[in-house]
Image (cartoon, rainbow, N blue to C red):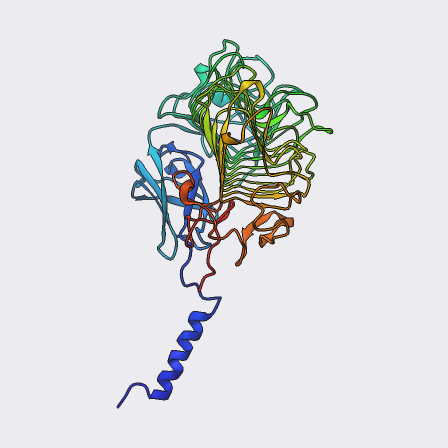
Length: 536
């Protein structure tokens, strides 16, 4: 007796083949990827339910169904949030120093990021609490000033829902919510963290029409290093977070600062000559923030969203969104006195505006020889202010795998300048430059020479002049973006950007804007996004 007749076996084979061909059946899902966490160290005890600090992790492909998170091999405790792009959990007693790894419900592990489990105190503040409190979860302080008077290296304070608009420091120098000098700073392996409580909206509003929310220097000009500010909302005046230095003092500001997952806006009534965040010291991490709703009409060129100055180096700026800003360069690397900036990484950001006349993009201004950095996987669209999307006056820069769309810049969407005798160099590889029809793609200005540029495997589209470079794909080629009007620049099947990139970017660009490993096909794709074959 046979288990299947030939007819039944044929029907079964046909059914299996039909299922495999079904677009709704996932043949293989993209593995989860972690971009960053808000904290990179903290205690695994104390705080709410004695499970230590909360940690927020951002990334992709975590899935809607909870899996597991391990820290140094030990399982996390108390998952507050689990969705496809965001996780919030407490460390719990099993957590150890090591790597954070996310494993999805279908048992796919992520990449890893380091975390240090260390001693430290955990406090809580709530504006809604009826009494002064003691700083515990169940009896929080009512004022953040209570934390200022007691904080020491290694402490973490969670700010609960509310708007905090007073001065909370002991010094009245300037008009800030917090003035943090050396006595109020962290230490190596023991940062001080101000963090918004998970699931609530907590924010600081500048206490006057000038100055801002936090500054990392006090009246004695000492600075507070090793600080983390995360998951808060800031409403500044002239700025939100000041670097604690002075423009005539090299690297004079705070160092080892993490600014993660915040929302920042400011009044900017006039010419502030600063940024919502000013960086004046080494080793800052600026991840996953939203810079929005700031500027003047008309825009003032000396106002910025992120201002890196005084030779600050080892600066990592990633996964931020800059929108609805009316100012000059949104990201500015510059000081009027030339300094040397080393290892500046600007990647995976979105820079856009309501109008192409509202703001510019990224600028590298006056700097000393030896300045260098990388600008990659960014999406810049509907900007330019008839100036540029990326302007480079100094240094040696890798400009890789960016997507530039509808840029208004009649001197060039990307350009380098020889102004003041500077000789910048740039390698421009694997970028999409989609002109508004009036703006050329890559140019040299103010005496810069074409030999200072290296260009390869870029897609240049939309500019109609016959002298436009690399027009082999035609000025009317369809890049097959998913929905550029809605800001979606993922590539659809058949896009001329697929498999047309160069692998020479691989030491810098290992993933795309979504965290997808590169390459997915035979070669790297051009632009910020790597096309992924549809699931089978």
